[in-house]
Length: 243
Image (cartoon, rainbow, N blue to C red; front, side, top):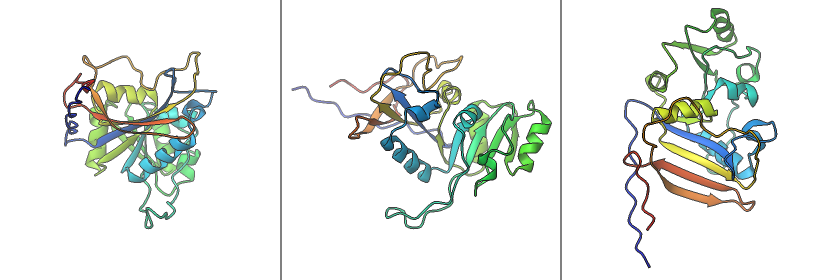
């Protein structure tokens, strides 16, 4: 019986930026959406439980404006005490990335929340939209551009050291291209979707060498859902030995 070699330690994330964990859901055939309901069309009870757990431990939730609109993001609510967390702290702010500031000022994300969202945009967004979002209570931040570097640097400057990225595919694709994903929590749902559904990460640019990731943990729900936890490999393109 072959001897399995020990896995190398995960590569640390650069200290100048927050640690980025992405949480995504996929069908067996690689679809990131289903049933016209975005990723919610794939989510299962085990996935939703993981989602809530990761939100509780994050300093901020990072999401693209398209996902906010498509999935009707709600404002954050005060956490209820649980057996595992009897004295929950304040919920993390939702950080929305949008080049156009195209968000409805009367959306629940802004009007029904105890923690104002942070909207990261650029000077190219219409000033009237930026002003309307600020008037609705959002913390509107104008950055030189929305590349992952400046974006994450702004969050780090605010003391947000642990960021949970909830997509969508364009935002995650940009983070992958910038080699800025430290962990991936991937829920694999036992369904086949077919059709034109897109992947969990897309974009015009890909890293020259795929980022190696290693499996740090996994769990299976009774309904066949797999919860996979990957962390950065120590070298680009490295993969764990087959053993």
